[in-house]
Every structure is written in C-alpha cells, then in structure tokens.
Amino acid sequence: MYLAKKPDKADPNEARLSRFTCCALSGAPLAAPAVVDRLGNLFNKEALVEALIHKRLPKALSHIRGLKDMIPIHLHPKPNAADQEVRFQCPVTGFEFNGKSQFLALRGCGHVLSVKALKEVKSSSCLVCHKEFDEADKMPINGTEEEVEVLRQRMEEERGKLKEKKDKKLANGLSGSKHAVAAVADAEKLENGKKGEAAPAKRFKAADHAPAHANKKVYASIFTSSNKSDFRETYSCRSLPLGRN
Ligand SMILES: [Zn+2]
Image (tube, rainbow, N blue to C red):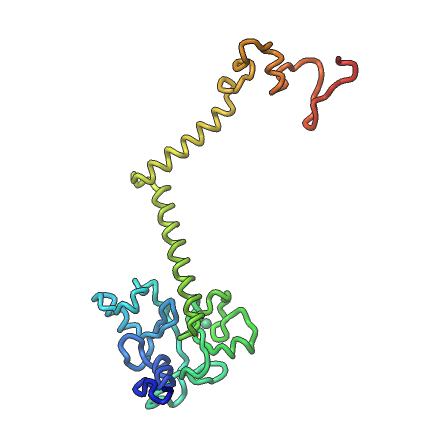
C-alpha cells in the first residue's frame, strides 16, 4: 500500500526550489524587478502586471486585485550565479535563496533577509537599509500553511479597515449620497437632543404627572428636590437638618 503511493508525484524538494527560483505565475526564472503578493508568493513584476491588466490571473491568485497587492522586493544577488539556478542569497548570512532556509521580506523597504539573520542580529531596523520595521512588516516568503493563513487574515483585516474608511469618508463627505444625508440627519438629531435636554421647557416635571388624588407638591418631592427651600442638600445625601421636622 505504501509502495504504490503516488509514484508520479513531483519531488517536493524540486517543487520548493522552483518556488524560490521561479515566478509563481509565469514559471520564468525570478529576476528583478520582483514582487511578493500579500501571501508571500514570488513573482516577476512584469508577468504579474501583464496578467492583471489582461485579467488573465488564475483563480488561485484571485487575492491579487491590483498594484496595491504587490510588494516590491529587493533580492540580493549571489555572486557569479549567472548560469546557476539559484541566483539570490541572504545579504547577511549568505544563505542561498533555494527554499532550504526561511526568508522574510520587509514590507516597508522590500529587502529580503533570511529568518536566521534577523534572529541573530536582534534589530528593529532593516539590516540592509536600516529602515525601522514592525513585527507585522515581516512577510514570510513561501511560508508554511500557518504563516500563509496569518498573512491571509491580515490581508482581509486590512481590506475590511480600508472599506470602513471609505464608507466613513463617503458618509462625511458632501457627496449627497444616501449615506451622507442619513449621517447629517443623525448628527442633527443628536444636536437637537442635547439642546432639548438643556431646555427647561422640555424638562420632566413630576408635578404635572401626579395622580389626581395626590398632593402635587408631595408627589414631586419623591422625584426631585423641587421644593428648594431653606436647607441644602449635598450630592451624597438628602440632608435632614436637625430640627426640620
Ligand atoms: Zn531595507
């Protein structure tokens, strides 16, 4: 049973190697200018832009919607690698960009470094250009399933936030859309509500709602200190001056 298992399956090492050396779309050797998508896949920029323009992106890459979803990266060339399959390396450790070591792209500056380099040199700025970066700027290249899932969630979160921002802008702007009108109406209501609260005419007067048989003054005194007479009350208690009764 084990022996018969998928004999024609591609060598996983080969597959991993090609993910680091070839464009994930065209299959051509990776070359500058290169980009990563938001999930950490590598592309030659030209091939990806071309496919995007002509709407020829395969379904598997439908998460790439525009230029915003391409992060330009800078791969460090391996010396004397013209004819070799692996043409890039980590600028710090010299690890080959061949899928055997993990690599990260920094979202702000696009420099690609091995995970090992960033672990050894504990730095919050890029080891190549010294631009500061956050933990969230680290994009695993061809990462594990879990890493890709984290990137996917972040992408969706960012898209959600962007949409929220757009909606807000629409509501605040003078676009005359339904949103805007509704927002203005709401704001006015709120404003009036505040005024109403302050206006004495609209105040609730307990005495006006007293039951027919009740003494209005006494009834009102249940709710308020409307009988503002000769004694003071504090915020914490209804004072009962000595000798009042
Ligand atoms: Zn950098």
